[in-house]
Length: 395
Image (cartoon, rainbow, N blue to C red; front, side, top):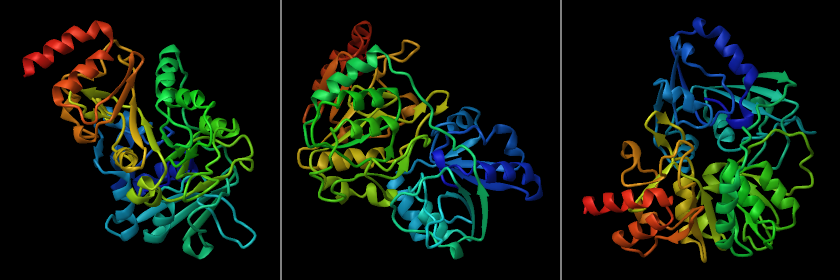
């Protein structure tokens, strides 16, 4: 297993690929990938397992070579920390060293500290382009079995281009976010639009999984002060930096923590007006959410989604918001009578706000028939009659 996202240790992975036939079969566990390093043709040695089709790993799922573990990220990180999920060899990308000779987890604090603590063998790629930021703890040189020093660009997160539909949805979402709210926002074109739409808000806080470049833009606008957060007051908190680093991060008060801390229920429920803003593949008429699967394979994972949804709903004044296009790029409705493959990422008992370009509806405390009516009202107009008929026939 290795660190993820921008912190993929690309030099180590390339060497592993080149030398793979010297080892025999290797079980590889994948999290989030921004690169195309792992490929189907390496299955001559690699056996791929992972949390889902996160980033470039969706291609492996479509090719039928990725076995998925449908686990919540918070629980997975707890299991890794406690030794219930054994890892034999860990590759980690680190930053540093500092003046004391210690290293930092750099871009990815999700589970890097626990990988170093638990793996039998730890090989580090220390990249001069990885940032030294405050994290859970430092990593001492004597915790590493081997170190490779590199100076190469990190693998950047993909950049998605927003459109007019994104902007309409973002405007609806912004109306549901009060001043002084604490935000969790995902990654992609629509979440980026939402962050831009919040620039006029005041005293927002950030307690999220991924800190993205649009999030830095919101911080820079003055809308984010983190002044009313009871923990990490004055700091935007997350677990991973989901961008490369062409600029200095000094102006941004950031604090990175392991996911087992940022996703802990009490940490989320204790935030004032915690608002979780996420996207989904599709939502059925009862409020069930599929955020990970399409008929061709996995394009996402459970990840921290359910942790954030439940933590936000338990927060004083908090809410969960799913923001989706009413239709896919191929013209298929994202509000459906039945989820693809029957995959439920978030159960209907956790349903709250759903937003499309046609409006916003609250499903909490609504009966099944009322939920269907509300969701159909924000579906694409050309899909509403078919959805109504499907609901009538089903009942």
